[in-house]
Amino acid sequence: MMQNRQKLFGVEIDAVRMNEAVDRIFRWIDQPQDQCQFVVTPNVDHTVLLRENEQLRNAYRDSGMVLADGHPVVLAARFLGKPLPERVPGSDLVPRVFSAADDRTPITTFLLGAANGIADTAAENIESKWENVYVTGTYSPPIGFENDTAECEKILALINRAQPDILIVGLGAPKQELWTHKFQDRINSRVALCVGATIDFLAGEKKRAPRWVQAIGMEWLHRIGTDPKRLFKRYAKDAWIFPQLVWSEWANPEESDAVTLTR
Ligand code: UDP
Image 1 (tube, rainbow, N blue to C red):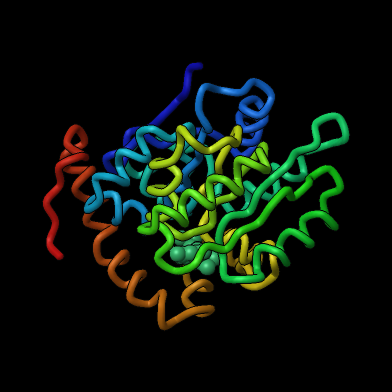
Image 2 (image 1 turned 135 degrees about the horizontal axis):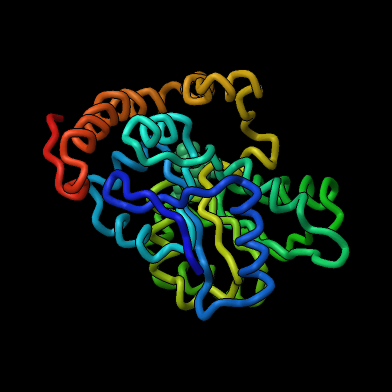
C-alpha cells in the first residue's frame, strides 16, 4: 500500500491524520498481515533517543506505522518543509481505536505494562466505557524483565493464549519498541501499539493535560509538573538537543542519519 512518509530525524514518519491511522489499524485487524504490525509514536524524546540508539532506528524501520506524537515534532516537520498533517499521540490513538469498535467489529485487547494493579484498573475502565472492547488479558512485568528469557517467554505465552486483536505495550521508550521488535514474529496479535504511559492514563493513575494546554503545545510542561524528579532531566536534555537536531536537518537535509552534535 502507498504510504506517504516524511524522512525526518533518521527515520520515516507517516504523514497521516488520526482517522487515517485508526482506519489502517482496523484494516490490519480485518486483513491479518504475515506479522504483527506495530505502531510507534515519536515525540521529542524519541528523536533524541533515535540519534544514539541504532536498535531503536531498526525497530522504527520495521514498524507498520510511525505517528508524530508530539507538537514540537509536527512544528519541526513544517519548518523543515516536510509537513505532517497533524499530531497523532499514542494516548489519544488508543481511545479513538476503542471508540471505533462497534457491535459488528468488536475488538479484543491485551494490556502489557504499567505498575502492578494499574493495568487491571485500566481494564475495568475500558470495559465499562467501551462496550465493544474486551480486555482478554493484562500483565505488569517485573523490573528488568526484558533481560530475563523465562519472563519474556511467559509474557509471550500470556499474549498468545489471549490472541488479542490489539496489544497495548506501555513500557516506556525505548523498551517498548525494542521488546516488540525483538518478538514481532512471535507475538500472536494483529497489531501492537507502543504507547508509553497510556495504560496509566486509562487507569486514571496519571492525568493528561487539559485540552487547552494540549492545544497550545504545552503538554510537556504539564507532564514535568506531574513527575518533576524523573522528567526534568529528560526534558532538559531534549530541550538542548532537539533544536540542534532540527538545525542540523535544515543545514543537511540529505544527511539526517549522520549528524554531529554538541552534548
Ligand atoms: N514501565 C513498565 N515497565 C518498565 C518500565 C516502564 O511497565 O520496565 C511503564 C511505566 O509504569 C509507565 C510506562 O511504562 O506506565 C511508560 O512510562 P513513561 O512515562 O516513561 O512513558 P513515555 O514518556 O515514554 O510515554
